[in-house]
Image 1: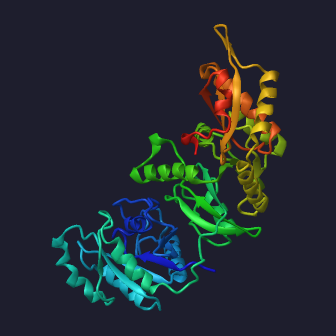
Image 2: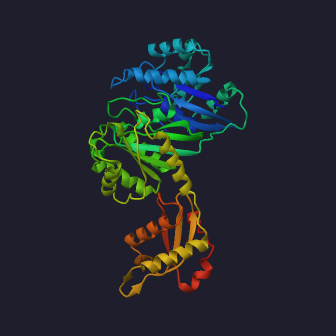
Image 3: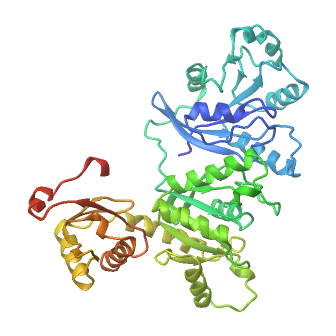
Length: 452
């Protein structure tokens, strides 16, 4: 069953995105005083007093987009209006009612939906005297708030909940995994999201930098539900034109960290760049399962086979040899379902837990095959190992001297564990803790607080 949906609408620069973030209590939409930052419809699921609903942020009505995307922005606004059960019409109390506010009001009067009028930017009592002018928009008494100062949230939600349609209490966000799509500009991330959603859910354009926010889109593939996170295209920090691009980059990095699986997307018609490698390193550092996704495979005119291209990618992306690859075409839907199935498989691998006895036998065999490093006459020894968490699988090894176990040896242990246990395509976390041999019994079965 569809979640009740609330759309935030209004002219540009009235604080819709700031209000959106305040209501859902997450910094999802980019907050920037520049008009026209939001282009796509941004969504978030949240609950209040036992009711769960979906909140939509939209672009400014009547915006003249700086990149000529006004038509596409308007299409996203229209889609949000069509999906909504309740509208929050936001105006700027400091500016008062403008001609564009009146045009928005005229449009909303034609829609058979409850419209709640919100007077934003009421940062002081002196602003409240301006509320009389807003009554003439014809939507009753406005709710006063200051999204920037986080004032008025409960007043808005208390009124809003009274207008939401009645739904069973059991309705929740039932998506199974979060899948972030990251990569440079114009590699086809938004096209892939639309192909999975089977609708124009996000704006697609040949113009680089179209997507700015990280946009969550719930889709169903093979009967399984997932949230796909479309992110802004990454570019070098030195080439970021303004603060909007900086916040877009920050949202993309945060999306990697909150995702269960990442699709690192490349355009297979272009060479892998230094920026691509840096983005891969970012994913490696977060220990998030990843699928290296080569888009536009339908345009591959070089005659290079999948095997040859795979070898090239593995040579170029250091430390990423465990990550599986997928050759797709968002345009023709080539291998899309197979890629999503692979994402769910990686998610399952990341949830595997290994028995303590089985793990210690494996570690013993690994250290026999290749002894820990010997430095200054001191030989590294592993006394005991345990798995302390999953997603990612995280292991704690009690050793005599942690400084003897260098990064190369830990990578060897990680590769060996992946080869022996059912998580061959995901990263692992391995931590070391100093212990004496006679403390072995004391450490057995211990789950340290910092790994809970």
